[in-house]
Image (cartoon, rainbow, N blue to C red):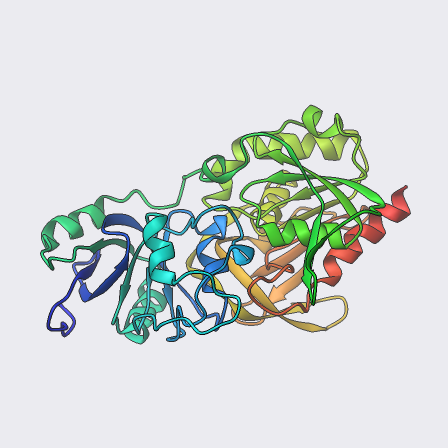
Length: 385
């Protein structure tokens, strides 16, 4: 069943079940195939599009005002957009913000990312919630000519994210040092010159703001590729190990990540901190399981409860897989839960400074309720010194 179409559609979104949405295209031309998800954040579309965790996904934005503050180089979470495409309700207006250096459409076009506007995103979001994240094909053609049968066939032919290791596609090619801290008025990004803790961060698709938060918490950060071994990590003689966010199926990435983490845990007692995919990697290394979620958690308004204190934090999330809390082994306890659906949002080893969370305490975009986790990591390294 097709949606009511605009007079001159220049873009088409085709779902694997045969549903067709027509709209106005912007950004790059051509077509792309990916899993379709929705994000409920009211700001931060540039950070979302450049978050490596969105590899293999087209993002539907539920907030209608997308593009109105333009884009700028400071807000990129990685070098280029990683999300496969963008779906919005209203076409972007001319940007109005003192930080803007480029229009969203021009930025997407220059980076090969397709977008579609004029979509009933409420209807689309309801469909995703009810039926699960569908496979979709997104096409942009200024001539308005689309082979919808071929697009539906492409959507149906998409293999999906289960079993897919995408961390290897978004990780860094070689190690590097990071000392840039969080943005602060009026000077912007300052440099960490008095670091107290040496941290190795394993990059499964790390956001820049996570690395900035580590630096702001007093860490001297060395970033290693996702395939780093325990020997690679320990060669830097770190005070702590950080496991980053990232895309894809954690079980697939775990093939090479889990042995490294288990090796570290067996041979050293350094503190370990994981976020998002890093949380799932730690859980797998400890013997737990991960599961594919119906439509995942994507947004900047997710309430998470810390079990020990009863404190509720409003958090930023982006994940389509979750740790199965029922599979946690003895000696590992659940520390945080989602108040939306009760899914696991944090674990720790009871007698060691090893912990992780599913949500994004670095925000960008989103609230900063959970920044204390970076400070907790730094405190655990200070105690272990």
